[in-house]
Image (spheres, one colour):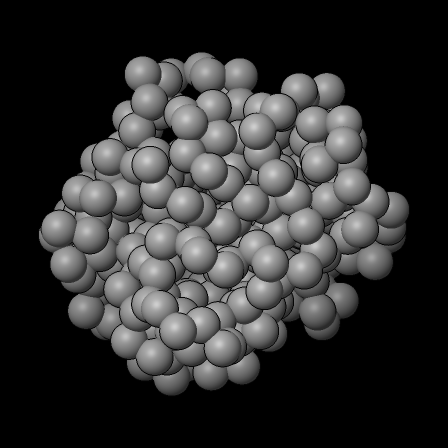
Length: 332
């Protein structure tokens, strides 16, 4: 058995904690919200972020970070990307051991413009880090619908260890060594999913969506190559697979938010009353800044950021994308 701490009581963190607990692993889930931790511990449900799901009775929950991580051999970092630095710094301080860290959040560090694995390596002072990503809606994983994901680490042995930890008959995990590519695919697909939702909200059809997703993948790949990722990674689960899921699936928070923006709502109006985080909002601005740093043109991400933060209308953004200077399909 492997003692696991899952840091983040959202839908994905709760689902993974439940998956591991049902395998017989001793798991403690940390949640920021006291009501979430209390529900999980006493009633074995998370009515806020995973409603209608009965959780493993053996799953423990707490709002105290030191309690959650004490004795853990693996720590799963599942907080929203913008909170990872603060939450994981507190979680890891004072630890006398170096547990493996598995990042499952899909975003970028907004202050330093780095991937979350880079951040976690720094915070963990050299602790081994792996990244779990892929096309994985939490509720479908919870219901044990056949799902495939990928775990990436620079240490192949760590990747195999985490693969074995998370694998079940319904959750198939592949290994990879391209940590940068896997992370960028998981983060940037949220921005393209926002854009896909926007064109759906505008009432455009399948042609528009297909073109948007395809050019979005090209955009993600361009930035990935500039950061040293392997091009074929973006044709895999963490690239094309996750992009298709998030840009077309009705369970996608980012696509749903994009639809509302396409219908004319402001960002504040579209986010009103929502407790779950749409990671693509913060990632859009971070991605544009990262592209500028590395001299990579990200036209879709730039237009999404302009809609989100500059008041640009969705129709004007689409027009500007369509009227750009003609180029060859493959370009850098």
